[in-house]
Amino acid sequence: MHILHVVGARPNFMKVAPVLRVLQQRDGVRQTLLHTGQHYDANMSDIFFQQLGIPAPDVFLGVGSGSHAQQTAQVMMQFEKAVLADRPDWVLVYGDVNSTVAAALVCAKLRIKVAHVEAGLRSYDREMPEELNRLVTDQLADLLLTPSVDGDANLEREGIPADRIHCVGNVMIDTLVRLLPQAKLPDVPLRESFALVTLHRPSNVDEPESLKRILSTLTELSDRCQMVFPVHPRTRSRMADIGFTKPADERFLLLEPLGYLECLALQKHATAIVTDSGGIQEESTYLGVPCLTLRENTERPITIHEGTNQLIGTDMDKLKIEFEKVLCGSGKRGRCPALWEGRASERIADILTGVQSQKSGFRRAA
Ligand code: UD1
Image (cartoon, rainbow, N blue to C red):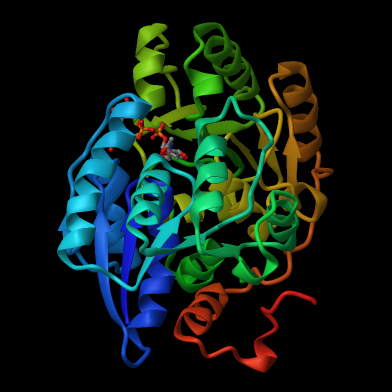
């Protein structure tokens, strides 16, 4: 069986790593790793391959940045050639980035089978480009592998046949569980208590007034607790546009994007996390660290119902109040959702290779 994995952007790398590792140990499986090059900076891509032990891509498309249409179209044109050169039995696509939807659409038209890892997540907010990517990818995929049962329910509501849907658990947690013992804090002047900040959603950073409001609130909060902020390239360029200058002291640390192991250690040791990232909402739930999410909605509601995540939206007064509660020790507590234990990639490999183990518990309830 020939399986081709498509990755393109930072959040894909922690998802593909465990699936590649598990399938490598299965007899009769040949794998190809294709990187579209949507993310290309060393600190957005290469460092993840090194730290997660992902082999160098067999195929690199080098599509780079552009408008959504340009980026998606570039992936489609180049991916079509690559996939026809060595037609796989299955293509695995991950998450909700432009590379995911582009590859799924090409495969659907060529009648090459596609499995979507992290299927079924919905924010029900079509302002988010990722939501459109999720909707289209799930309509096209032959096999939908969901991280939690809410994903199964969303897909069934959209008319996806139940026999295509499998709740396998969260592959990103497989990577977290494996690498947590190796997590290492970055070499920066950290105080005993600090908050980790990450921001990159267009809705927060592309609108100058909203970015200014968020940054001035974080500056104010840095009087109460050190802010540690690894800055995404999109956000760095928007911060330069509005003339935000680095605060003079270490109460507000602005860093370059971090490696996986450094980001994981910061999450683990943080008193609070302020973010708009999807992955960090999940990782903080696993780690039991209070997460204040600067979004009005989330495609990962299980992190709210069961985990430590809390939606703040754009209300900066609410952020200050909830942040203060976390500092006083009354932040949100939670539990780890079912099947977020480090074995999701094994369940995926079982399904793909047809070893439908009775005891592994991944089959959907009838
Ligand atoms: C993309 C994904 C998003 C994911 C995020 C994680 C889509 C629609 N969005 O958003 O789901 O959460 O990645 O990072 O696929 N840039 C660099 N160097 C890089 C990569 C990007 O400088 O290595 C710059 C680009 O030139 C662009 C900006 O960062 O100006 C945004 O990159 P892009 O890939 O368009 O989207 P992200 O915001 O990173």
